[in-house]
Image (tube, rainbow, N blue to C red; front, side, top):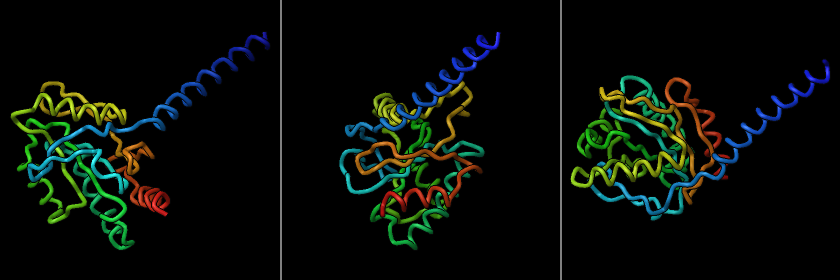
Length: 200
C-alpha cells in the first residue's frame, strides 16, 4: 500500500514539475515577430524590428478599463522617474503601451490617455493602436504580439475586456526576459531592478 502511495506521489510531483518546466521554457522562447507594424499615438508607423538597441517594457491596456490598466500606467509613470534619474530611460529602455481595443482607442484617444497621466513630449514611451481603415489587419498584428507573449484577452460583448494581468520586459531583439503583475501588484522596485540588471 505504501508503495502505491509513493508511486502516486511521485507521479503527481513529476506532473507538476513537468508543467512548470513547460511554462518556463515557453516563456523563455517567446519573441515578438519583427515584422509586426502598428501605428502610434501620432498616427505614425511603428515597426518592432526597426530598433534593436533598447529593452522594451510592454504594457497592454484598453482606455475604458476601470481599474488594472490605469493603475499599471500610473505605476509605470513612477518607474519612469527612477529610470530617468538613473540616466537609462530613452537611452537603454523604452516603454510601449499597446491597446487591445484598437477600434475605440484611436490615436487621438491614446493621446488623451497619455496626457491624463502627464506623459507629454516623450518619444521613449510609445502608445500603439491600429488604423481604422485597416482595423481587421491591425487587430491581427496586435494578436501577433499578445500571442507571442501569452497575453490573453477577450471582449465578452459589453466592451469591458477580460484580459491577463501581466506586463512584459523584452530585450533589444524583442525576446522575452521577464513578466510582472499589473495593477496594485506591479512592484516598481522589482521591475526597476530587473531592467538595471539587464542593462548593466
